[in-house]
Image 1 (tube, rainbow over the protein chains, first blue to last red):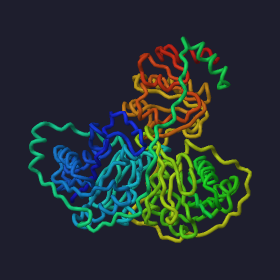
Image 2: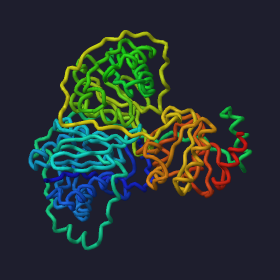
Image 3: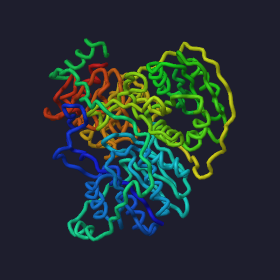
Image 4: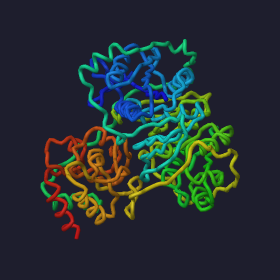
Length: 248
Length: 312
């Protein structure tokens, strides 16, 4: 079985994002870029499934400009077998990304597609669900545990009410939540080895995906700031302050 | 004119408050508002939906295979109704985030996620980068709009309406490839985190599952819901459904009290809409104090028992 894993290049988790003065976007100049943290968890899960003897090959896929090869190489260094860059200069929205993945699925015939539950830049949380819809296959979103048994899998999902368990037949799309696993650290020899692993580049046009229906995104503004608060000295003052504000 | 269909969230017996919040967002868009209730034996839920203000009609689709909210089955029902509507809305809870993108893809459109403000016809504002930026999104007037509503940004609609209820059978057959097994919940009797007026929240500084009892004790004294930072959940001090933040729940209680939470940006994004934020932390440099309305530098293991005493 092959496993496809999606990799998105995003502004690093630890960067304090700043909105550009002209409102055209956020400042990415000289800013550290990384693999979307949820995608790292997705890849880690794929690697563990392979290491458990339940998959033969792990393929990482990213859609973007050549700069996303950096993140694909990180995926290869973590242990993916090969990488596919779907080349585009446009910032693809989830429906377009799902269409791209569907084309890759038609070429690769994977048994499982594992994606992060959301990207930490646009926070959309859509791509896995859309891909499952277009592929007409099961979706198991926000997964914190997955147990593959032959042609099906039992997945535990983190939902607002608690933990939901579902069974899905493969092939399927799974999107992973934070507590699925702890991704491994990449070691230097692995980075060297990753340079020799295959990285295929296909343009979005050659793949035959039309990029349409993108939603216009504009007018980036910083969020409204909360007014400066006060400090109290002890619990008694805190209770008094809450009473003054009618909260107790 | 817009024709808006809201997909109701419920647990089989009661409507989730997220649906009433979607109605308020729909009111801001303007147009006819219908609500679809999918499930099995859902008369009482449909009646609750019909009582929401400014709802025109409730469509109750009942079938055995719709009892569990599996996105694959519910999306098929929503798509069967979609041609009559210009807008399909669901809440940005895990329920809506699971379901709505599947509907959007079947309708062939991108989805607008997390609407926090309506700013004209088919123009919406939403947060990105964990709430560090707000953007204007415009899907265009020609396309069907499928969207999730950021429920922390909207008040619940009132319940003095009297819409008609139209009962219908399922128009799709169950998907054999996906099977619902069950739900385990640790919620208990405490107020639901997402609708509680007060929330008491604990972080890594609690140090253990046993110590987290302090948070429950204070919450019960205040009649508050209980939240947690990602660090506390990851460390196993409490259940995942308590996590507040970018990847957990986004909440807007009147009072939010954070104990031993440093205030990482990913946590803060989940509480920005709270009325009053109280922070108690040993570290006077903790970033949580930057957004707190009332801050107290102190050891939570002393402060919480003192608070309990003072509250009597």
